[in-house]
Image 1 (tube, helix red, strand yellow):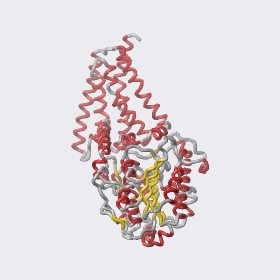
Image 2 (spheres, one colour):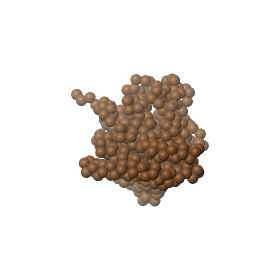
Image 3 (cartoon, rainbow, N blue to C red):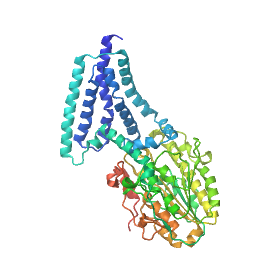
Image 4 (cartoon, rainbow, N blue to C red):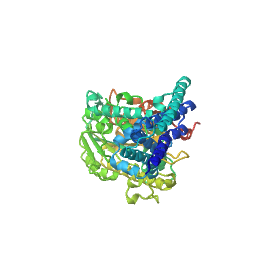
Length: 562
């Protein structure tokens, strides 16, 4: 290539490439509820900084390649916006990357081809040209860089003036939270600190004790099973009013208690599951997640046999730390092969048959309805077809819904089989089921898909919750069943109630309880609706990022006033 053409191409690169880096900022200026002055900061200050960076050296190839970390953030942000339509890369998104296994990541990335191709086309060619300029030892004329720097300095000045105005006129303005990519860099640092905090868990939780005491004095074997679902939303359950027969077995199961007004306080697995497995909730999560122990420890302190069965791989999160406190831990997916949840039943049946101690507490962590949905069930459960399309696109919604509903039919059979095992064991037994969170499946004009987005939706928070007690259990503890039956129409927080409900079922007292949240108490108190946000702050739903569409659906969960 002739030198003049190289200089012309370099000049084009230096003027256009910063505009490509500002694409996420442009999108965010439309998607986020920022004030106009904040949007001005978000467009001018980064663009000016990019021009200053690419114009800082006559070795333009080196200057351009220095922006690779920024380009990575931009690419990540565009993919996130493609998925969710809004929000910056949150701390939880980085945590999800750290805790997601290779199989899950491959399934997701394999179906985001359009977004991935887009970011590759945006950022790989200019960066590759920058590398070529380094290899070619190209020197950019000073007059070209002078104009680039002048444009950059001017935009930076405008950006800082706008920022000063934002701080003066907007009481809640925070560049740390609203200025891309600075906010993303800060979130990455916070995520790293959380990972470090989790790594110290064994030390920080060492002295924790539930001071648990079993108030029951007979020695008759009792079995309690907690089933934690994955990515299951209540609106696709027939027993909660869905117009498809997704619960052919549970809908005929007598004595099954259903809680249709249940919300999770988190839309992420790595937060919701620790809350389900402990005394944590949105109000104390931030200050206590690294120091409390799991419900297994409470049962251990009373001498119960505790077992954890999982169809999810280890991910070095608090979930692993909490569940390791069970006396026995069994993962059926440790061989790296995809397994279906029904394979947990063989393990469960052996523990139920061998239950000879006073109390046995078993937790099953299922794969439930996690994307890709059509891989979560066997062929005999392909009730709704076609169910093969997996690309993350609204045009594939009919297939995705069919596959998702099939996964609910599969879960229905799993739970009914567990109840059968407990029912025929002859033991006093009880089962509690809920899901960690729900899922978006292109449900409305927003085009949201999946879960764990920085801001939640109704679909991600409304989860199923069930309680079942055997005839023997109901006969021994009629007051527990009566209260649980009476509380069915009431508002429930799954992440707040599961812990206390299970301890009540087992007759365990502890100074870490909030007993008015047990569904087995007549004095059950409906909780205020809260959400654990990206900064681990428990906030009212009004401050969670839910939109008008979500509040309309939430209002539909309220009982009809006579």
